Length: 310
Image 1 (cartoon, rainbow, N blue to C red):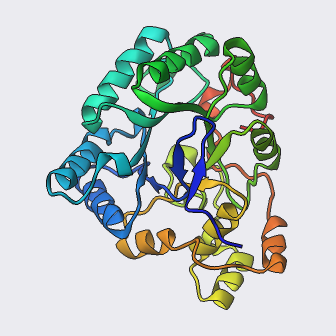
Image 2 (image 1 turned 180 degrees about the vertical axis):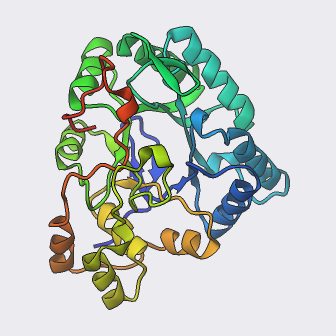
Image 3 (image 1 turned 135 degrees about the horizontal axis):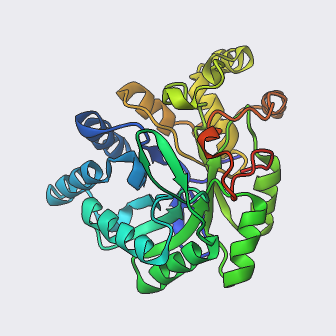
């Protein structure tokens, strides 16, 4: 079975199935990693306002364009409206700031980063806000109609929240981004999105072993799982390649992140081989509903549902 290099969104635009994740990459380390990723062949870049690296990404893209090594039309850029900017006017202002930093007139995909509106953290304290998700979504719909975003979507939303914005606006997300990997396979949400013609992007597809301390509630390392390591050895592939191939084979977009050139190159080659149905089924049995990003600091928010899939 050949894995497609692109999936078609319900807006008609094509999204590359292997993206370059940039969470926790900043400054010179980000610029070097991204420049190499573009050299290798990545054309999908995933970022967000809260990653604090849009400006560096814009610089790398601009430098490559000026050198004649890259055309904007060949890139797919995803960014996200933060949960501190979920009122209509704030969505528009955040988008303009992102476009300025990314040095582009439009993004290919704009997402609502989280459904949990809040004010900016001060001394580590989060103050919850009540913002109707439909207000935020309708602001994104206006962005898409105005041409600042080719496609729009959401991240970390439950099925109930998805249904609420669609029923209220009549506009379905083109993409839903969520945590997904062999330990958290998200079958219910993936089946729902498939039934609605919504593409699903998997963040932390390798289990994000280097995630920030405030997200560490489990010491498990997916890349060291004995089943994954054994399968990788049989195919002479890296554990990361096996994990990415497993998701790509199911029709996910994957967003691996690395600052290491060898791993960046290996990750991009994750679709160039086939695993047997038996090995695929063995990986399926690893699903344990283990979420590495639980966002526990949002407990108590009216839109935070710990026991729901998101």
